[in-house]
Image (cartoon, rainbow, N blue to C red):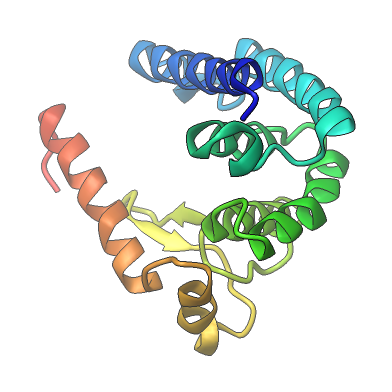
Length: 181
């Protein structure tokens, strides 16, 4: 395992999540959904990940461990200003999942993110919008009758279970800030 690379990827993920938390807590994301400092961090991390992939290929579990492999996925998932890079990572992640060197859910989330960003129907139902009351509803899903079968193949729970999990998270958040549901 490449511990230095693992540490670098985990640090990138921690910085991403720390900045996100800071922006959410300050309320800055409400007025500006893609804050310039978040965009800059995402672009910096994506640039570095491109270099890593160029040298090592996809940084999977065997190379960097489970947490750092998750960090690599998060960097790609958040590189929305570079959809071409996101798309180039799909076959790398597919190969890693096939070799059990990456978690299947990572492929599902990335593939669906790319679809929804390009206005297409998602395949695994991982991307959600909100209805008029702020409750989660999945973006359109291709062949929705078979979505739970596809989700199960990649280790995801059912779409209904996931929607209920997100709903519960929103309920708790609203309760913590004194709103009623």
